[in-house]
Image (cartoon, rainbow, N blue to C red; front, side):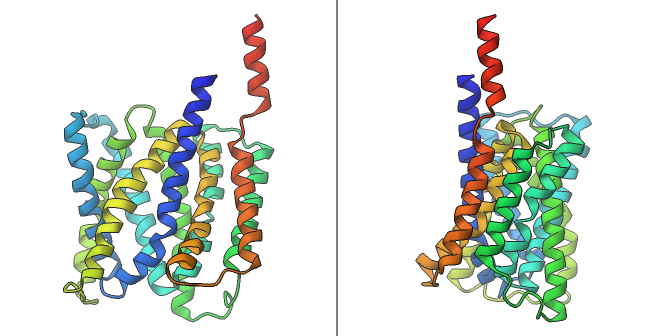
Length: 309
């Protein structure tokens, strides 16, 4: 039981760190997207991330995935890293970082549903309560201001963000499934490899319509490096590691930390003001995460009964 609790704690820390990293990603993405089109930026992000991860794989001398599992890695790369993150970039580009934070935070709901149907995880009242509390908290933190007064491009962007949330939920469950046979580092590395392959044709087509600018600016390259090394290689690995150690439905709740961290970074770095709604919503989000992170009583009781027998 001690080992199980330790693994859960490590998993929660990994998931919380990944979500915190992504919390600051929307602002960074917005800076880079003002010069680099979505799929070009995505390809650059994956190239940098793959190089970092591949060096780690070679250092640890990890074996390649079995040929029979190639399709699983292709699905993870296409569904999660190409389609989901691509839709996220498009949505942020057409809409706003503000809406990107709230709409992609719907992912935990999809993760809980996919985990129920694909992994057979129990859909407990605790999970449902946690998702509801955290969802309400996200709405309070980010707010609905102007959500229904939007341009056509913003509406398309918001639909893309919802699609990003849906496909990220599927990715998390597929990565959980793959973790039964492979390490999180290997899963992340080869999934990003496939994502880069899928992104290449979209990037080439994109060049015909959208120019790439700002490559002479240090801020653009620093944004690309952050997205590649920290948000991709680091955060994707931590997310997959966390999903390996805890139930997918439980781990999904940490995704809600993104808007809280994003708002805090906006306050600390950009001088944005935080009102009472931030603290009210943030408390609800943290409460939802806390509820789902607590060990179940029935598990402790079962452990005691088992020890007595």
